[in-house]
Image 1 (cartoon, rainbow, N blue to C red):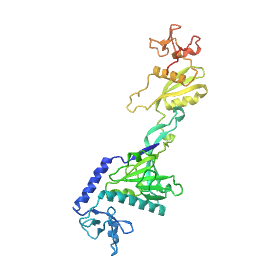
Image 2 (cartoon, rainbow, N blue to C red):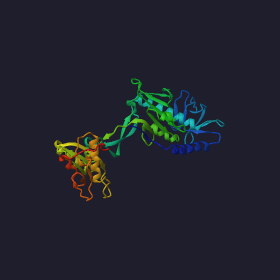
Image 3 (cartoon, rainbow, N blue to C red):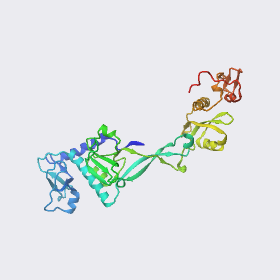
Image 4 (cartoon, one colour):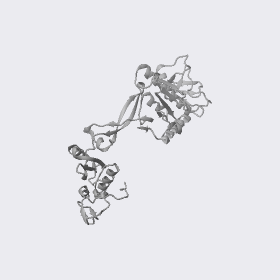
Length: 376
């Protein structure tokens, strides 16, 4: 199924960004400082690496956001290495963080493709049990889920910055040279979130929120999870658990069964027992339907189930609606409700003036359905 998975608090992102902007402001009223810069050829460098490598006389560095020259402050011991703007330079830290995130992702992904190294994403899949799918009509959805890891470089081998795709311009576009229809949008989120139109599109999108330079590590480590990113329009297939992990066997269920004799019964039993009954009596069963399924209680209290009488009558109505040629007193125009409360004879027959079991209609020559069909 398609869904939105992962990082969800936009208020939290904005709060974290406020801290980053405040740090930039405190570092000097007219001097904005960053940990990253770019060289004349556009290569992104970080101050920590530069401090270890050492400066060359020909080294020049420029701001990723405003393109102004930067001063490398990498030789001191009192403060962490960084790049500083010249006094009086105006720069936008939000633009810096957004552009830096885009360029870093492109550089890291290209390096993975060139070196044959993985760039992982983790997607969570709902787990299901199919042990009783044949009698329930659908698998049981379990509370637990499974997480699978996928390597983006197995699906995509090119990355482009801000390449238009129809009506959208993603921050980054991942695509496959051999299969151009296979594409993925990467959106770097600082303050401007996805447009509602883009979010509601069918495009697969990974939204990576950045609150500060420290968040770039989620890109550098080459692994995105639901805690560090949002995954939109990814199809997460159900994962089937093994029979040994099945917790459905003890789930209480109500089954309505019609035998080849024409008589019908309601059984309220665990799914495992009902499944075994169906196998054991399969040759005699003409109609079978699970009406209700409940989890067995953890507190020791009985779980809610419709009363046997109500569930039985529901089964009669459903069998008739399914087109099964059923004869049952609840379908007869002469039927009424017994006032004696005997569960074995819940029907009062207005024709013979007596209480009876609803299966008496199977052999009753007086059985007549009302002119108005039995309502479902």
